[in-house]
Length: 167
Image (cartoon, rainbow, N blue to C red; front, side, top):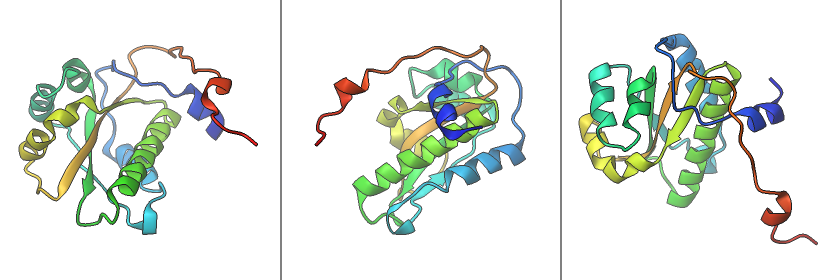
C-alpha cells in the first residue's frame, strides 16, 4: 500500500467483527510499530497484549468506550517505560509515532483499530489489573480487530487554516 494513501485512508475503527486476529500477524504489526523514531533510539514503548475476554471486560469497565474494548479481537495497552526514558516529552512523542506506525500497519493489513486515550484517567487501575510494575506508565490502549463496516468518510481542515508561518 502506498504510504500517503494509507495515511489518508486510515480511520479510527470502533466496531469490529467477531473474528480473531492471528498472533503471528499481531506480532508483525507490533514489530512495525517499533520502527518509530525515538530520541537516542531509546525505544521507550512497551506493550501488553490482551486476548482474554475477562480482562477485556475489566478494562472496558475503566472507560466510557467500553463497547469498543469489549468488541475488539485484541487490546494493546501501550506504556512508557520510565526506566528507559530520558526526556518525558520526547518519549511521549516517540510513543505517539509508535502508535501511528501500529495503526498504519493495521490498516495496511485490512484490519481496523482505534487509539483510546480516555482510559488514561484510570491508568493506575489498568496497570494494577495487568499486574505490571510502576515503572510502566500507560500512554494509550489500542483496540484492534476486523472492521464491522466499510470505509468511513472523514475530513480535515484546509491547510490554509493550519499553516501559521511561511516565508
